[in-house]
Image (cartoon, rainbow over all chains, first blue to last red):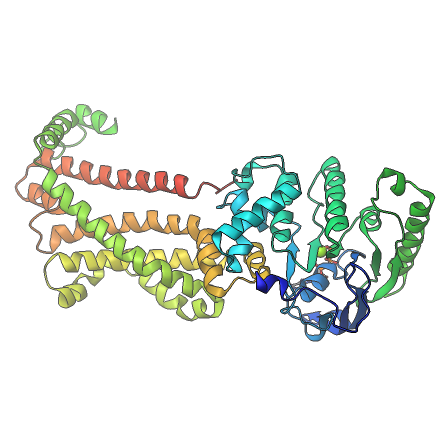
Length: 274
Length: 234
Ligand SMILES: Nc1ncnc2c1ncn2[C@@H]1O[C@H](COP(=O)(O)OP(=O)(O)OP(=O)(O)O)[C@@H](O)[C@H]1O
Ligand SMILES: [Mg+2]
């Protein structure tokens, strides 16, 4: 297990500690990316605090997925780098939850084996794997049959499996690309609550791409608003709302004011001449 | 049914087409008496050997070829060329290489089946969904892990398509080989023997049995597939 904890960010001696939050930053510098001549990013820079929940919102096709794919190491950058507290993506323990759970889970494995698989990849011994899967399953109070194959489960249950599979390795950074957009409304609301619980408990650096502004604000501590291509940061909005973000919070004056402000920025950027 | 209609209607000379009842009753009695067993078993054995060789040598090579589109493109022509060449045209070559015995027959059939399997597996790998591979990559899986734990399963349905085609081709090649290259047993040998000695019910019966073997093998593979690839189409 040394490999998992080795990268844990204990503050270096002499460095001020900020309680249980990580002091470090995610620094994206000089990022460029084009697809066959069409520029998505050109010298893009962004700095975000680690240990917080970050939502990313922007116009269709502006490159939200491309951004988190690049900084999570799933896709190459043309230029630039992303450093987590000075460490590269490879040196950071990362988990990724895909939008399309149907195509991201392994249908030839039972749900429980799907959750266990990343530990197998890491070379964790069998007994320890079982123990950690049981721990994460107990932590999130899973009520459905984990011996089932993914295709026999509902969409929400499948995405729960994806999230547990991402959490079982105790990642430092969790990426989610529109994780709930294929679910019905009720399930989406439940999953948002679930994600809040996870964040409040573990304070994992979480980067969520969402096409739903309400969702982006509800879950965020920092909301990154992106422009149209070539994509820049339009605004980074601090979301200083209390946790948990229950319906009282999401219908409060403060929430609605934030939403109005984000929408104004969004419309200004969408309507701006390219 | 058609056979029956044609026979009773006398559309074809009865010397060429025996009554289906005679044929079937004779065939059944031969099956029961075990007279067919030896030929049936030796054909089945040859087909099984060639398929085993084709799978063991074909699946890994297909996966490796399919892994990189550029590698596949570079050998695509060769595979397509040999796939289009009738395997039976290569009997003389294999006879030179392997002699007159079983080895030559099995080798030709294995070669033809191997091509089909390589092609199908490579095609399956080339068209494997990216998301699961990405998911495994994001967990830090090594290349061998991605191949054995993800791409292999992802390709399994296509492997079965290849397998079914390979079995039908192997059966054809083996039967033809048994007819024309010095066989002393096998259904092909039995068919040609019956034809030469004008034992027509015996000939038709053997053809039926060969067909049943092909159908049975196909069914067996389908059954295996539905057990093994339980997730397909869901
Ligand atoms: N592999 C690729 N090849 C070519 N173009 C691509 C590729 N991936 C993305 N693009 C293009 O880059 C742009 C950004 O794509 P991306 O998927 O990152 O956008 P997005 O903000 O996530 O969009 P959406 O809101 O649809 O999820 C799009 O215009 C897309 O067409
Ligand atoms: Mg996207």
